[in-house]
Image (cartoon, rainbow, N blue to C red; front, side, top):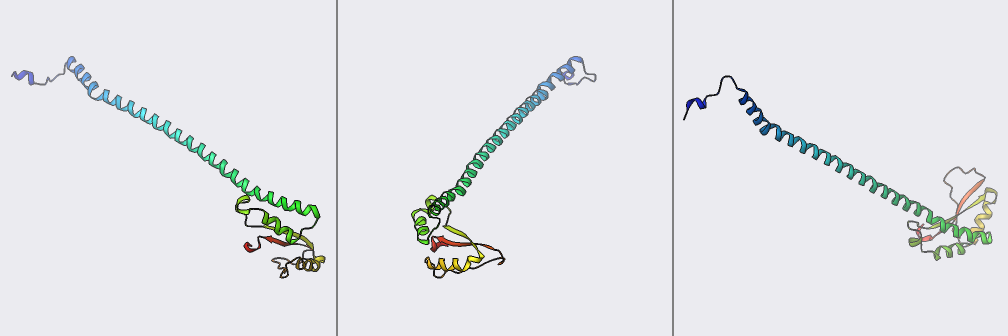
Length: 171
């Protein structure tokens, strides 16, 4: 073996430097470039996927909001149809007996037609001056144990009294 071939030159030649630059490009710069390019493509893909998932989540959320709000509106408006039926029965005669009210509520399938509604009630406005007459008429209509209980101020001229509640066993 030739000992001069193993010697590293003290002054690098231009060919040596150009060879080292080429070697540096091949061993470091090219893999670094490929790594950076891959990282950029992966980052762009992750960003796109994040936005896609976020957009889908927003659409799903809005769809659920619309569905639930529609269900809430429907559930709150359904009992109004039942109350309008009672209103029609009251408007026909101008008076509603306990038996008529009970028959109307019994004719409805509350759990199916009005989910969540436990019963219907009839509230009547009674001037304080007619209170004793109202209580006597209510007791004569089949509620012999009817009594009046007030929760607040007892000085109002008009009273709003719950006259009927059906089904009575669930009140």
